[in-house]
Length: 320
Length: 122
Image 1 (cartoon, rainbow over the protein chains, first blue to last red):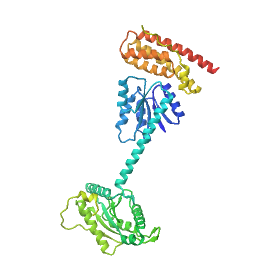
Image 2 (image 1 turned 180 degrees about the vertical axis):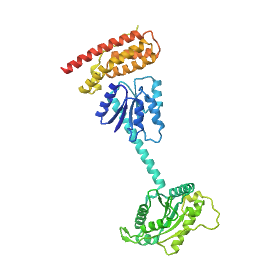
Image 3 (image 1 turned 45 degrees about the vertical axis):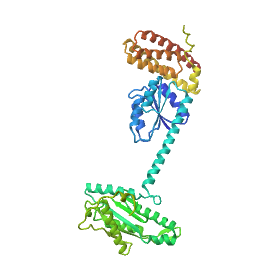
Image 4 (image 1 turned 90 degrees about the vertical axis):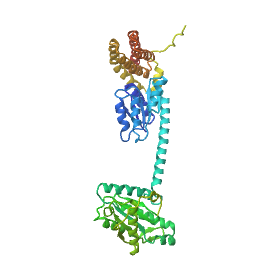
């Protein structure tokens, strides 16, 4: 594990460095507080730090305060080294954001034991961050396909529509539905149905650009957002995506021919409408594609006169 | 009546050996750093005391105290701590006398260190 030693006294610095190298640490040693702060704020910074209290440029407590202000960084475990031994000064050190303090001259075994405590705290923090990230992922992603779930893709769509209006660009919304998917489930079983949905998700992701978005909108419905998509190219891009699906899928019960139908909407054609109205429009276009025989797409045409309904929060949470 | 302070050696060599985990090479390196860094530090301290610069005296005696304590120069470290305390209390009366004691203690320590280094080389 990497560790930073910030100590201006060369004797103390060398002693610490040797003691920690013997304990297996990867040591970075600096001689003032300014260099310590730079090291702790760098990419791939050491997460364990031993900071002398009195140092040129910045003292140990000032380094602690500056590091603690950087909330976006992962946690750094900082131990102040001090020859100050009054209770008041200990409180000042800990209040500055230090996790522990050690009185100089240090005892090697005590130093290592205290750093092992620091390592345990950092390990615990890593586990908490990982658990939080997993929860965040589960809250915004579909567990089967790992695509964005309905709530997340609609939030992104809302944001992208506002952005494209601000920037006078167009966003293409594609609503796709797997043709005759119920038959797959009914004849081959839900596990095969899941294999089909997972493969379609993979193909959709492979067919869009890295800055486009794909989400699972409902059971066998997928929503694709093509950012900054020129209205002249929207239908042809949508057609490419549709074709990328129309190849047999290798399931555990053999190859299966699968197609999808799409409704396509260009936000620039619709002007400033509500999210709900645009979703209704693209859904209608999808319905038309289904009615036209499936395995095709239809472009959503804005109604001549319509009163935009307000956005319903329910829409962001539930299916329709 | 207060009891006399317990005897402290000028150099607690066994304590230092524990601190360096019996690493003789590291020990020699540290002592050589000390031999190089001590004279200019003492000179700066003498100038600060002569100028009654309390802030500088406190800072330099603090640095010296840390260095001496790390090398287990217990008696000299205790005198450096006393000098730091006097400077922090802005008490100029005993600064000169305490500085002289510090010079004596560091000289004793230096003698012991020199003897060790000569013995180690022999």
